[in-house]
Length: 202
Length: 109
Image (cartoon, rainbow over all chains, first blue to last red; front, side):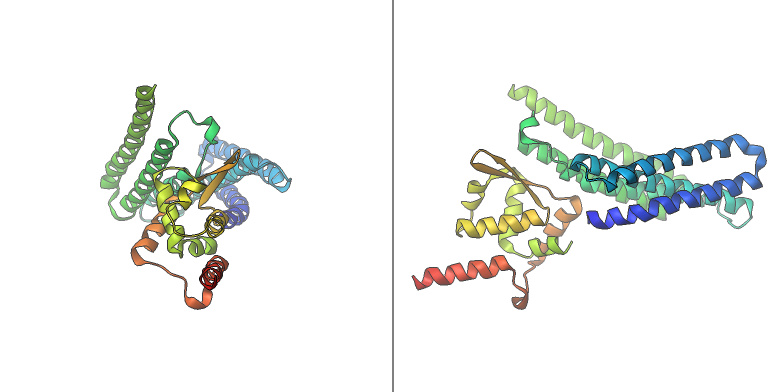
C-alpha cells in the first residue's frame, strides 16, 4: 500500500504542479486585470515546487525512517494542494472560456477532494504508534483513543464527500460543516476523557 | 495488500488481532489463548508482522505486541470474521503446513 502511494505521488505531484502553472499562466493572459492574484498563485506554485524538489532529493538518499516518512507526507500534501489548485484554476478558466455552465463545479470538486483527504488521513491515524517508554497514559486507552479518532475521521471524510457529491450546494455547505465540527468535537471529547482518566489514576 | 489478505485468511491470526484490539499484549499472554505450540504461534506473529498489522517491541526477554492496523484493514478484519475467510486447500501457507507437520509428528510420538 505504501509502495503504491509512494510511486503515485512521485509522478502525480510534478505533473499537477506543471498543469497548475500552465493553467495559472493561461488565466493570467485571459484576465490581466487580476495580476496580483495570478502572481500570488505563481509564487505558491514556486514554493510547492521547491518543497517537492527538496523532498524528492532527500528521499533518494538512504536517510532514516522518520525523515523518509515526513518526506513522503510532504509529497502527498503537495498532491492534495496541487489537485485542489488545478481544479479551482480549471474551473475559473472554463468559466472564462464559457465552457462550464455550473459556477459551483470547481468548489464542489475541491470539497470532494478535501473529504477524500480527510478519509485517507483518518485511515492511518491508528497506525501511528509512539514508543511504549514515551507513553504517559495507559497503552490500552491510548490505542482505543487512536482507533476511535481514526474511525471517526474516516467516517467524517466519507460523509463529507457523499454530502458534496449528492446534495445541492446550499444544503451541502451547512451539513458538511456540521459533520466536520461533529467529528472534531467527538475526537476532542475522547482526548479529554483520556487526559481526565490519567489525572484520576494519579 | 496481498500479505494482508494472507494474514487475515487464518482464524488463529484473526483471533490474535481481535485480542490485540483490546490492549497490547506480551507474546506469552497471547500464546496462552491458543492450544498450539510456541513455534507455531511465533510463525503466526511473523506473518502478521510481515503484513504490517502488528508491531513488536522487545524489552529485555519479553516481546510486547501492539496492533498497527489502519481503519481499512480493521474493516477488512471485520468482513473476514463475518464471512469466515479461509485459504483454499491448494494454497496453504508455510505456517499452516508447518503446524500440520508438527501435529503429525506429535501424533506419531
